Image 1 (cartoon, rainbow, N blue to C red):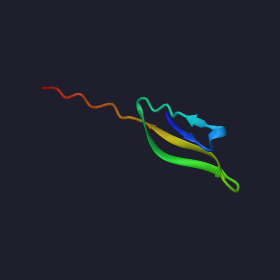
Image 2 (cartoon, helix red, strand yellow):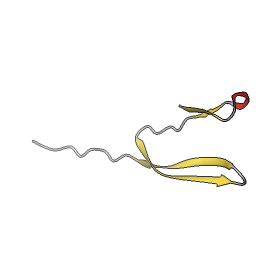
Image 3 (spheres, helix red, strand yellow):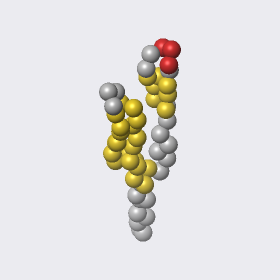
Image 4 (cartoon, rainbow, N blue to C red):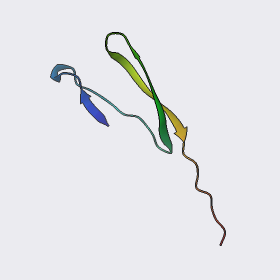
Length: 52
């Protein structure tokens, strides 16, 4: 969990479920201020099993 952000009277937190994935990019939208933010996720590659 990240945060809090903003002023004391408007505490906001957010989480990004990243289980079995990794963040590969960000995107957002803004007017005068940043209004929205998000992330692009990529599934993690499964480790290759090696035969002995």
